[in-house]
Amino acid sequence: MTNKERIMLFTLAAINFVNIMDFMIMMPLGPNLINTFKIEPSDFSILVSSYSISAFISGIITTFIINKFERKDYLLKIFIGFLIGTFACGLAPTYITLLIARFITGLFGGVLGAIVLAIVSDAIPFERRGTAMGIIMAAFSLASVAGVPFGIFIATYTKGYTFLGWHAPFLFLAFLGIPVYFFVRKFVPRQSKATQMAAAQMNVMLNIKAIFNNKNNLMAMLLGVIMMMGHFSIIPLLSTYMVSNVGMLEADLPLIYLVGGAFSLITSPLIGKLADKFGKLKVFVFLATLYTIPVFLITNLAPNPLYLVLTISAIFFVFSGRFIPMQAMVTGAVEPKIRASFMSFNSSIQQLANGIAAFLSGMVVLNVNGKLIHYNLLGYFSIAMAFLSIFIALKLKSADGKKF
Image (cartoon, rainbow, N blue to C red):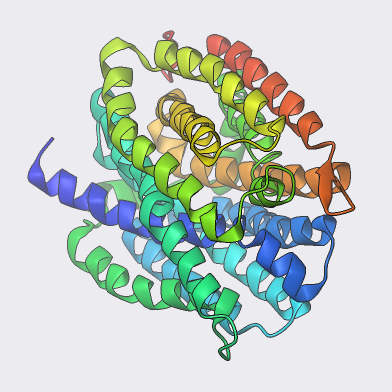
């Protein structure tokens, strides 16, 4: 991989860092927001799902218009909208205004990942794409290691100050995104004229038809949906469960993300390289199978020493690296000429799956005398989705009809 490619990937990973931290910070803020606004877990789940639902809407729209724009220009415009939405979250004074601000942020943030993946897929050959995805996905780990713990820290230790407390992480992200914007302008290359003209001349409806008339494309889409449904059925209320049922202090919550993120920051690039070396499918099946173990343990966890809780959560973070070979397989399953439209539509469907999973988890889990009950049911559902994702992945083929 050339230095120019690495700089581009790290710059795009910076966008992912800001975007992912904006989404992730809501989960550990759950206990804080529930207490501040005097709301139920179901109300908090609506806060989380509002972002995903709006991301679904914007993803559908983007599917029809993304080929009309040069990718870098479109990325920059969407990123500006995302930063404005994040700033609005930081200024929201009530539950309703925060809900509206999250919806607006989701309209822009929900498609950032799809555009980033489209740019990476165009620039990096499939043979090296696992490594590239490992770098891009490492942004998730870095957000966990540095971003989320810092966000919780400033939210916890600035309580009592106007527009700080839980507002502070969103304001921090909005200002952090400004230099990232200029890095993108400088280091992310523009689409080649030939690729841009070819994309602009393509009939959007024919693109959509090409996506849905191909069984393999539908299988690739279904794989992402199943994985997101399983993952985000347990994520939104994880922090609340750790405080209410496991007995963690709110001040200790950053340790889950710090320790888990630190391990996955190391393992994410390694998983990408292993996927390139041994095969995306083999690595995915291995990780998806092992992923079920920490899911079962986390969702059935009783009060335990902090070191044990952190160990289990760290294993959960590491095996969540199954998304790396999955993303590489999905991008390789689609023909390059329709990849941008597919990635946008695929992202929107996944966001809808996130929103539905978050909403339903809030309906299933009840708060009884300060304890969450039925959280273990979400764990069993997540495990079932993991095994279903393996079954689907085994049937998935590359765009040229070969097995992964």
